[in-house]
Image (cartoon, rainbow, N blue to C red; front, side, top):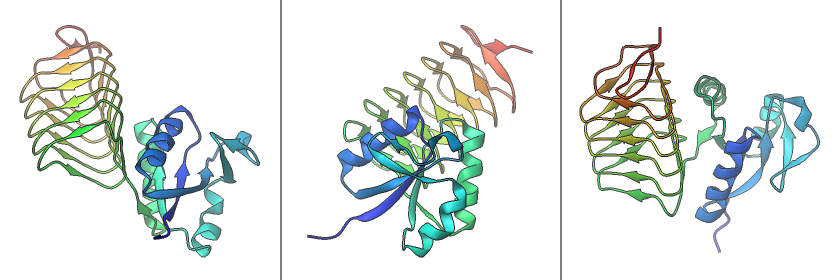
Length: 212
């Protein structure tokens, strides 16, 4: 039987539990343990796995022939920063797609993407690196999602939507066909976005309007 590659999970929080569950179900990797920069986890176990230390432990792990990692941090900016640090050190990013997600023809995923249970991603949608499509969210045909975006649980993107780098689409929000969401945008939970949103805007409501 072929030996599984070992993987390091970076981030010991609630999001990590869900990702670990996906990795276990996929069966492609053996989880070696976790890293987290919060010292409260030092020497403990998390969700059944040892916490191996902070990012200071990365060189030793590379020396031990570990090469694959997945970043399990929900906050977009923090996830992107950790991923950039790992990338600079030569780590390879694994993705995690739940066995009960529905993935259409022509869908493309960047490194480190995570897709939770009950998600639907339809034909020719493209997702960048370190994107989270959370539980029960849908991404319809021809959507373009840039790096480090978080599409929260129950969010629905209609066809041809584009979402800029670092944006957060809140739980239960809806984006209508062809709308462009800029970079570093926050869309409030339960909102309906019917027109383009500028970079760094904060919008909420039905229909969504700027909060500033």
